Length: 192
Image (cartoon, rainbow, N blue to C red):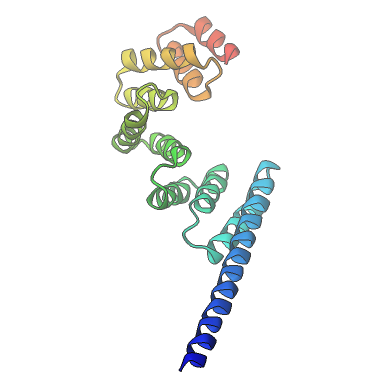
């Protein structure tokens, strides 16, 4: 009996070490695929990065960063609905993923879903009431709702803090152009 428990204990120890080694190998392979996909993405090869991130997600379905980057690759290829679903999935796995929340909100603005965009901005505001991207998203929501006074005020607030913020620059310039301030609109674009 004593001999059995010694062998059984040794067996469990060997099994545990084997499982941990296998898990760490899987994790390393996932990390390698994530880095490979990011490198492809940063080189502008969005189709190859997409395939790499899909391969990663076949190995590890709950990889939030893999879902985020696959969504970003789809977004770069203008497959906005697919990108949005992947950003949403990334947020389900990792609710604190600010970057996924911001990118999803921008897509919601592009597809004119102002309610979803505003909800996402409010979630960002709950973490940081001065979140620049949340203010820019709210500016976009105001613009979609034809509230150009508040859209302009929010865009100007963003640009005071981050002068090169692309979304706020384009929005403010388009509002200025709409208001007949064509020279001012060009200056805004040149600054950004």
